[in-house]
Each structure stands twice: as C-alpha cells, then as structure tokens.
Image (cartoon, rainbow, N blue to C red; front, side):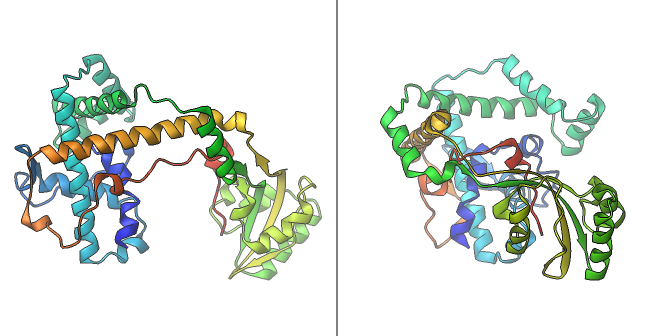
Length: 357
C-alpha cells in the first residue's frame, strides 16, 4: 500500500500553497475548511512555516483522485505516511521558491494576469468567479501571489533544462528497447446495446435482422449509459474488450455495419454493431523521434531538479512537527517522485476510449 501511494505523488510537486489555485487548475472541487487552526505549524523551512491547514488541503486534493476501494484499504499508518509524503513535497516546493527568489527570477504582471484570465474563463461569468473567490475566502491579491510563486518555480526548473541535448543514438536506443510503447492495438468504432435478459436481447436482435435502425433500438431498449447516444461507444481498443466480445467481433471486422449475435458477458447480454475497424499500427522511428527526445529531456530535467532539491535540503534548516514524525524512513525527493509518462503511441481516439463492461 505504501509503495502504491508514492506513485501518485507527482501531482504534489505542482501544488499551489493556496489550495484554491490547485482547485481551479486541476478541478479537484471545493473542500470544507478544516477545524484545525490555520496557524498550527506542520513544518518550517528556513524559518518559513507550512501549516497543518495547507497539508490537510493538499491531502484532500490528492485523495480525491483515488477510487473508494483504494481509500477503504488505507489504514491509519498509510494515511499518516501519505500526509508526511505530502509535507515532504510541500517542503521541496518551498525550497524551490526560496531558491527562485535568491536567483532573482522575475515574473511579470502580464504573465500572472494571463493565468488569472485562464482561471476566470472557467466560470460562466465574472460574478460567479468573484463569488467563488469569496466562498473560498481567497482574495484576488492572494491568488495572484500564489500564481506568481508557481511561475517563479516553473522558470527555475526550466532554467535547469537549458542546454540539455539528447544524442541521436540515445533516442534510437530508447525506441528500439521500447517498441511496444509505439504500437497501437487494433481498434473498433462500435455501437453497443446492453440487456439484463437473453430473451429481450434476442427479440431486439431479430428486429435488427429485419432492418430496424440500431441507434434507435439502442435508445429505446438498451440498459446502459450509452443508450441516449444510440449506443455509440466511439473508438475502442480491442485489448480493452472482454474475450467473449473479441471472439464475436474478429470474423466481422472487415464487414462495416455488421451486427454480432447476442454475447453473454457475466450477468448481462450485449449486441454490437461494427461501424469501422482500424488494424494495429506501429509508429515508425521518424514519427516517434520528436516525442522520445522531449520525454528524455524531461527526464534529465527532473533529475536536475531532484539534485537541486537534495542540495537545498542539505544546507537548509527544516523542522517537522512531532505529529508528522513516523517510524518508516521517508524516501528521498528522487524516489518519491513518479517519472513522466512514457511517449507511447497515442491518438485522439485512444484518449477518448470508452471502457467496456
């Protein structure tokens, strides 16, 4: 469990200390304020306090990404460990901010206002934006300061990446060693109908064979959330389909608008219509080269950031409240940060892929 928690901590590196900014940028929703005093200190970094309130807000933001099953498996030790890892990343964030200030990194008011406008655009009106600020207890001035802080840190990190070059042979080696990442499995554009009884599914199938429209029958009879869309699932990877469905679709893949027989999967019965089929595709080296180079540069930048954070921690005075002291050793900044996603082959259709029961 503790190892799995580490995998989701990359988001914490971009936590804005004022929780509102995280909420606006990443859509985690609003949270009730903690009953704990905002002034209770969880840690200090060279004399600058990080409060328990900030840790608790970041904790709520993070766990909102977990499903209920994962949350139910978290025991007290897991939660304490996660809160401490969050604190460690907030400490790292503060160290980077202090370093950015020491290097006199500048952020213009126009850069800040550009981000403010982006946030404002998420609301239907200026009134709604102002009302939300008031509800959160955040002033426009404090939001500006939070954004300025994050932009300073971003500029510091980008400065570490200056001069990074990736040799051609290293890019080629990555491609050859990770070819599976650049293969897109076969895909179907499907319509689906779902039924709780075989008899009802067979009745609808007969109507399809008589020429009735699949989309209309789906709207009238299908029992899943895609019924209102005429059963349209969009593009679906073959590997995401249950074996029973794959077996039924394979002989029909070259027959546009073909309809499957009734397929039993678990307690439900399905009928599919194949709108279109795309065979497996492999991105050639020249097509993937740019993405690989970008990915490897990001990796090297992250290493430089981690090294800088380690140096800053070594020479800084950091204190942590007893309530957040735990027996298990906290990993170093390098080990607590998840690496960037690999530059695997993706398409717009894959991004919108719909899970199938």
